[in-house]
Image 1 (cartoon, rainbow, N blue to C red):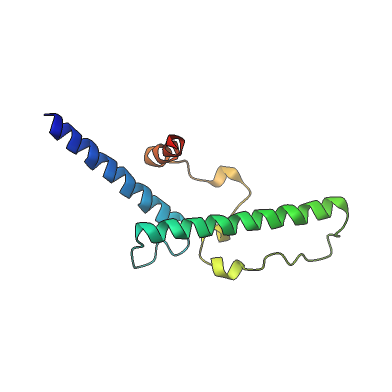
Image 2 (image 1 turned 180 degrees about the horizontal axis):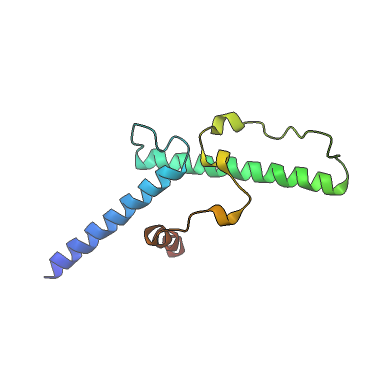
Length: 119
């Protein structure tokens, strides 16, 4: 009986891990492509995507600070969107500042977020 419970827990754990990777694939560029990305490819893609998004945020913050400091005028077009073409088709292209437009997390996704607290 103990072995059966242990096996069931392991099956559930593997199922959650696989669900987590499937969810992550849906949120990274090229993740919904025809060829299924491996777990390693998915993690690498997620790291690369997060870095690109962080760079965009940093550049946006720098431009905003320059506007607030009066260094830039609104008539000047900032040239900080250097590599948006490489992210075509990614979720960033449909970004909206209206946070109410985001879908709420499913219980499985919420459980995956809770997973980060394990470390």
